[in-house]
Every structure is written in C-alpha cells, then in structure tokens.
Amino acid sequence: MILDTLGQAGRYLALHPSFARAFEFLRSTDLKSLAPGKHAVQGEQLFAIVEACAGRTRAEAKLECHRRYIDIQLVLEGIDEMGWRPLVECVNPETDYDEARDIRFFNDAPSSWIATPPGSFCLFFPDDAHAPLVSAGMIRKVVVKIAV
Image 1 (cartoon, rainbow, N blue to C red):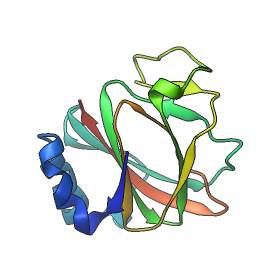
Image 2 (cartoon, helix red, strand yellow):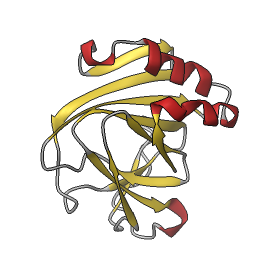
Image 3 (spheres, rainbow, N blue to C red):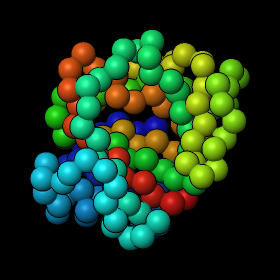
Image 4 (tube, rainbow, N blue to C red):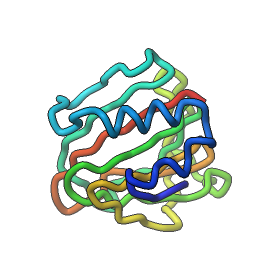
C-alpha cells in the first residue's frame, strides 16, 4: 500500500509497466468533469471508475481485495478514510472470490486507517485488503484499475 500525492507519482513508475500511462491519465484528464461510472483508458488492461457518493462509517466498510487488478484511488473531493490490512492477515472471509467482479470481501477489521485528502492517492496491490469510501461527508474519487 502506498499513500502519496499525485505530484509525487513519478516515484512509482518503475513498479509496473502501466503506471506511467495511469498517472498520465490522472494528470491530463479533467477528472472533475467525468461522470460517475467506468471510463476506458486502454481496454480491460487499464480503466478508470469515477465514484461520487456519501461516505460510510468504519463499521459499514468491508475489507476487499482484488486478484487481477491494482487500484490507484485518487481522491478528488472530500476525505476518504480508507482502511487497510495485509491480505495474509485476513482470516474471516465474508464472501468467496467473485472472479467476474474480481473481488472478495472480509469481516476482518482494518489494522490501520488512512485519511486520504483531495489530490492524494492510495495505491493498493493484490496483497492489500482495503476498505474505501469511509467519510462523514461526500466523496468524489477516481479509481484506476491496472491489470496485474
């Protein structure tokens, strides 16, 4: 898991061949004008999901993980307090892995919470369980999905 600002994204380009394109998309696109929903960048290899919704409580947020995609979750408005726990420490699954949706949920509690303000992102790898969209207010964010 990585927490940083979009201005420092260059530090992470060597971690994956598609990170340069992902961060270029985040820097060069008018993200605030994108409607909520899925937006193609490079087919199923790299796409963005815009979310605009009311936050939920820590108790309502479930840890989730993905096998096929890395998430870059950039907050645009509000503060998203994302929960995190190493996937290897998640021992209480709520669901089986859903291959079609590339997601599995857990009942384990996050081991830490990351208050992510506008202009900052959390980068979650497949071995990072995360519980996003925790806030007392509205959150607008873009999640870039990068095929592993």
